[in-house]
Length: 183
Figure 1 (cartoon, rainbow, N blue to C red):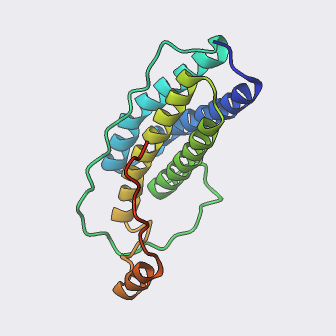
Figure 2: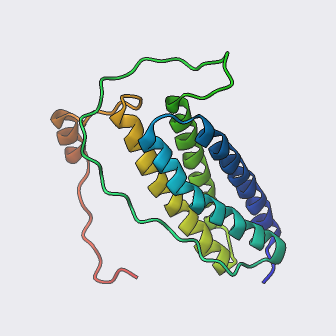
């Protein structure tokens, strides 16, 4: 099955994003110092290679014989986060520190995930559409793990919403009675 013009355009954009993430991960694996972050990157790299290769097949053939192996959602880690760590981007050194590596990777996953989701909405090729949905899920699961590493190390602050806010939020909306049939 051939791709429509808009599908091919989106595929090109997604291939460029994947080219970027693979190139960055190669550099990151040389610079990373934290053993836990290195393990995360090494584990996730193979999924990005498979993702890239499936997209190349779609670009060449309009179809793919591969099925993306979507990783399971990681378990939510329990940890006491370190105190927030102040820092600034290092513009004078070509080597990345672990904070920069995880931040760049997380934002790349977030951007690529949005691209997969957005592209899927207008994709008529059902095989490509299923792949895009799987690729979004892969990015989401990978980002969950990387964001957890950032939070754990004090690089990505987050606080529980206050009870006052949650109470106000809950009072702002009422449920709608559900219909007997959903789909």
